[in-house]
Image (cartoon, rainbow, N blue to C red):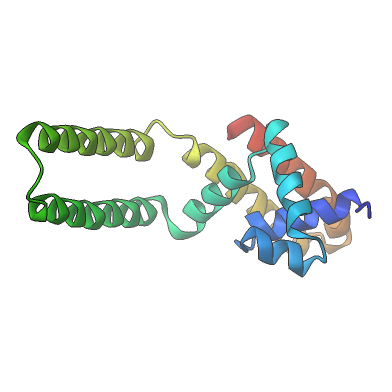
Length: 165
């Protein structure tokens, strides 16, 4: 059965704005998980990355610094477990241990680069936060225009993601 484009926008909104997982967003809107997954992939192919928009909004809402601290904390907890495992493995020769440490150092470098100032999450997060602020302003100050704005907001949100994400 073919679904309306509005249904696709609703699934995207639940996934991005409400932070539902894709299965829950699909079920909430009466769409199969496979259909939602296909929509998400097609959107990605067209430059609308739902995951980037979702993460950027999460960063905006919870704070970039807090999010980065959580990621780093999890990474280092897992690193400690990896080191313990390496230390408890008696059949590793020094070359294997050096190779594992080099891979770990590479991971640290990649995570630091990704979480540093070189990502676009701040830009897209700001843009999405601004759209939410505008939405609230219109609902409160110009409620007669709220429906028209909401019809424009979701498709424009995809454009923001394409441009900044």
